[in-house]
Length: 152
Image (tube, rainbow, N blue to C red; front, side, top):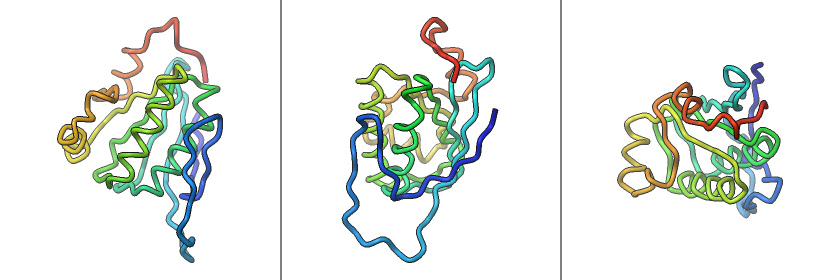
């Protein structure tokens, strides 16, 4: 199963996820974050593929809102950042917050396919150890304990 989704930067977080109020005026043309969701092979998790090369704070808020909406029913979501080559500091903070929320709620939210610039950013900021990072979606699926994995 594969579903195409676009998340607007003005999305809100649900299910107890940290909320991020928007204080700035919405520009006339708002960037839409391009993502797609699919059930992982064997139905073991949901995979969220990010298709944008650069993710800003507002993009990450939209991404976090989508994760907060889907993760409670899926319980396991793999975030594929293979196409992403740039995260700003706000995006990095949003990813840390949604990861902390997911971990506290007992959900798995590993990251996969990190480009060299994104991996370097996580290493430079010492956040690489905060996230569960895998080289590929298949590797992340294989690392998930099967008794804890539910079909999405």
